[in-house]
Length: 440
Image (cartoon, rainbow, N blue to C red):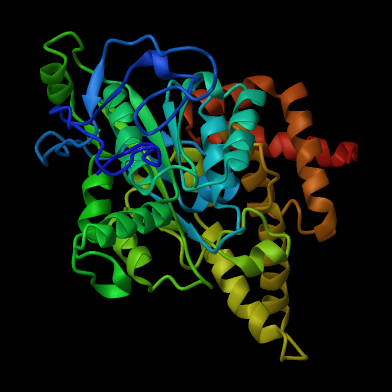
C-alpha cells in the first residue's frame, strides 16, 4: 500500500519497499509543530531537528507495568471536572453528532494544560485543512501550541495516511510517557479513521463484515487505545536504562467519535465505548438550547476518573449530577402538571440554576479554585434568590472579586485541592462578602 501521494505513478513504474518498519520522529523538537502522519513538517517552519524515531505500532504496556489512575487531568470545564472527571492514563471518549462541540471540549482541555507539564498531541483525521488551521491558530493564540504537537491527515490525504495518523500521534505521546512525563493525545476523530481503514480493506479485497467494515475493525481501535496508560516507575526506569528513576509516566487518550442522528448503538461507537473508560456524550438538543458544553449528564460517565478527582471538587460537586438528572426528569413531568408542591418547585428551580451554572464559553477554561467557588455558590443556595439569566454575569463578577480580594485562598485551593473547615469558611466569607457588596 502506497501511503502518500500516488497519482503521479503510472503502470509500469518501479515501486520499491524500503524494508523498514514504519516509524515517525518523536521528541521535544516536535512540540509547537504541525506534521503529517509520517512526521514530515507541513507548517512551513523548516525541518524537525530530532534524532529519535519510534515505530508507529507498539505493543501496549502489560498489566504488571501499569499503575492505577490517581492524578487528575483538569479540563477547566465545570461540567466535566465536577461530574465526569478524567485521570492521567485514562481513555475518555467524546461522542456526539456533528456540530455538537466535540472538538471544542478537546481543544479547551489542551489549552488548560498550559503550565501543568502535560504535553499534548492533537491528531486531526479526515478534516478540512481550514478546520485544522483554525485549531492551530486558536492554540497559538492562547499560548498552548508550545506544549502541543499537531498531527494532520486532512480529507485531501490518502486513506492510508488517515489510517496511520492516530498510531503516529500515539507513538509521539508514548515518547513522553516512557520518560516519566505526562502526555495527552486527542484523536479527532476515529470514525473517519475507521472509514479510511474500511476503504483500504475493501480495495485490498478483504471480506467485508457488518456495515461493510472488515472483521478486525475492533482491533483497529483497541490496539490504539490500549497504549494509553499510566505506567509505574520500574517500567520507566527499564525503558530509559536507569536514566529516569522514581517517576511514573502517563498517556491519556481523548478519542472522538461522530454519531449519525444520535445512534450510539452503531458498530464503531459501541466498539469504542466498550474499549474506553467512560464517555462524554454531547447532545444536539442541548447544544441548540444554548447549553454549552452540551453534555448529557445522564449517559456521560467516567469509570476510573473518580479516584483522581481533586478532593474539593469531589466534595462540592457530589450532588451536581444527581440534581441535574432529577431536574431533567421533573422538568419533563412538570410540562404536563399544573399544580406542583413546594418541594418539587424548589427542586426545579435549583435544577435550572445548576444547568445555567454549567454553561461555559469556549476558550475560557477555569482553574480548580474558580470551579470550586462556582460550585460552592450554587450548592449552598447562594444563587437561589437570583434570576436564572443573571447567574453567569454574577459568576464572572464573583471570580473577579475572588482574584482581587482572596488571591491567597484561591492559590491554596489550586495548590492543595483540599477541602477543610478553614477553606469552607473562606469560601463562605468570600461569597457572602461579594453578595452584600451588590457589585453584580
